[in-house]
Image 1 (cartoon, rainbow, N blue to C red):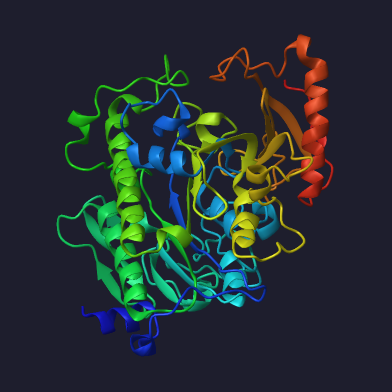
Image 2 (tube, rainbow, N blue to C red; image 1 turned 45 degrees about the vertical axis):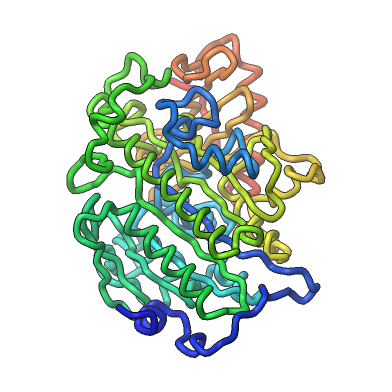
Length: 484
């Protein structure tokens, strides 16, 4: 495929070939708008990244460690919904999953919802997407919504969440690819295959670099927002296996066993080396992308954000890899580097995935609209944030209908009793206390204090905090029962 064909099929206007090279566009306030490159992994634990301390494998993430040293590391970062689709819906819209109705997988993002792409496009950005989308298909969840399946087919333009300028993606990438084979679809719905023998993370990054070089060559005057959604280190569904690069089992077999997995069953014994191989590949490609930005002269005015949708407990908390309130399901890495995020700072406050939506908008000079669940992280970096919440709120679906708060010291979780959950709305009129963990005494969340008589006052305090978060998310006050 030549450069003109790439431009035309992927969405960069062919007329840009004739444009002179211009400086980065300024906004209405005269401030130069930074480019924004958002790198999103899938199912990655925070302790796979060495700079977080106590890494599973030393030396696994030199590039992310370097990015943290240059930028800002958020030490306590959490998802708001430990399932792929709901987490993505929350991140794109800045709302909790129940507010968008995307509270489980296989529910499309409603066309009425405004995403980061819509806001940034209106502010003069070119908006593009490469990778896994997971917000276009509809199952038989709602009685009045007609099922629509594009899990392995091109995503229609009206189901792309406003990413109109560039598109190279699959709705469910694990359904159109494996570690060493597969394809995605461009803006015109044409299939684009990974090169034979090329590992999936490398191939996807090749296309990101192609995008960057093409834009630079055409001299586009508009800043860009490119969302890059990798599937690694998510397990390969149809193979029931994590697929790291060839040689991962030998290279990463001598790992440190995290305390949350020690003495458990699950499948970590068989799967951890390939899981780590996936993480190492992600890290290497972060290095490739940052080097390319530097080579193209874009590094100084490009904000790079790296995080994940949720973590991975290797089937030790339930029958899956996430979908629980435990840290090994909800705690993720989060590193930002670029304009507004520099100096090797470490932020200790708890932050949520929903804080990243207003953060991206704020980086572009856009005031977050009313109704966003989170707050811009810039306030924590520059010290201007006041009354930052001391906890994060988590909604849980599919394995159970749950609600949780995570503070510096405590994890407190409610679950709807059997037969009480309304699975078509992912809520309940009745919840029951399910988990309480003291993270100072029990950092690996092994001793459940939810029925401990010595913690009645603690549960009452956390219950009040959780109810306030539920109300802010538009939920009706439920009845809460003690743990049976």
